[in-house]
Image (cartoon, rainbow, N blue to C red; front, side, top):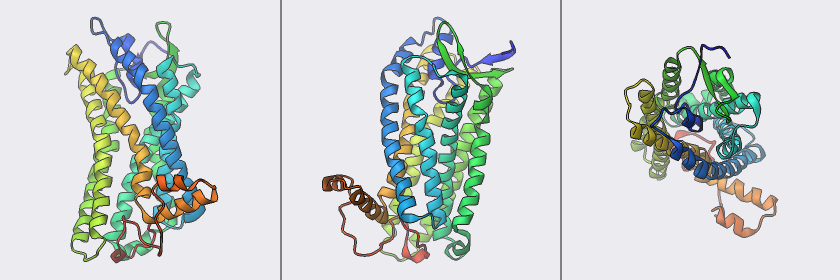
Length: 356
């Protein structure tokens, strides 16, 4: 590494809080933050890993076994589940890192960091695509008959993955594992001016991870609600509630994180200089990141477990696996189905037939 390289001296994007306590200038010691992260984050990471892994694997199994990827919605749901799986599969590595130090070497340091960020971006992008999909199905129902095909879903999904890969390239290029103060770490080492790279990284996350999805989802769901309000349908209220749930959960779980990393950018640029404020931001970063991580566990609930057809498919799956009856009841799939009812996310007036 050349002398021109700049090591990340503060809390950088995502799991960087563990990297920076040895770098904190005295007397602003952040050892308490490091102890906090070592005590609580591995447990929370493990919880997110188990719940997210189980829920999203169930989603993938149901899609392949019963849905057969016949529509654009199915394609997006599959890709969303894959995104969340990528996201959670990196967590065991970070859990171990919190407890000890990075022992997996530079190649895995780059790969795991890249997978984490690819899962982050792609998951948000597919939620945005699903908003557009709902908009087409409900507001542009006639046009959607030709546009909302599995083929078009595949093409747009490939574009989304390409964008997510490219947005995460800095992790592959700049992330390194090296020894620092007798401690092996895995963090970003930017060439040249660190502040410039930090500015770019933070704005990239704020714009791609919050601002653009916010604009797109707000437009789509406002038009959907406007259409449903003028549509006489007994399932209208249920559909509106689902729409609000999607928006509220997404922004409640990710907006705090984006605010905190923006405030940390102000700290990096020297706008915030108070040691106590800096320490509080470190704590806030950990809490808001965990909040965002839990969102990937809720995606199966939002897009599937509240849908009538998925409950039926899940019940069939559990029966095929010969699981005890109380398991099905615990999962809320003990409902008797008389017809192929549409999902609460759809209305019959839209002509949309790919309900969950």
